[in-house]
Amino acid sequence: YDPKTDTWTMVAPMSTARDAVGVCLLGDQLVAAGGYDGTQYLTLVEAYDPILNEWHE
Image 1: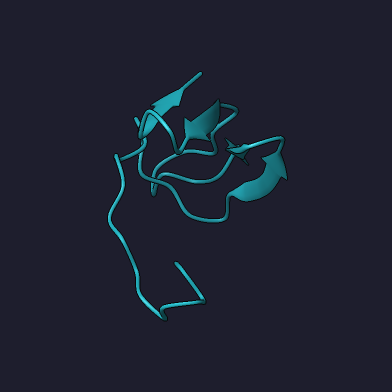
Image 2: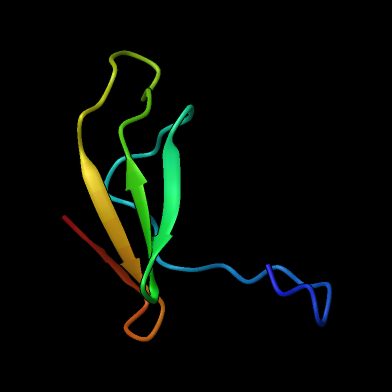
């Protein structure tokens, strides 16, 4: 989301869709930790690189 233009932009999907996830900004990357995929609780941590538009573990 860009508050300057009030627009949303689609980015690369995470490897596993989830809710109840913890997120934080670490440097220039968004880090997503844990969550629930609808079946089980996750311990997976992924980081999003906005320059490359990709997630990595």
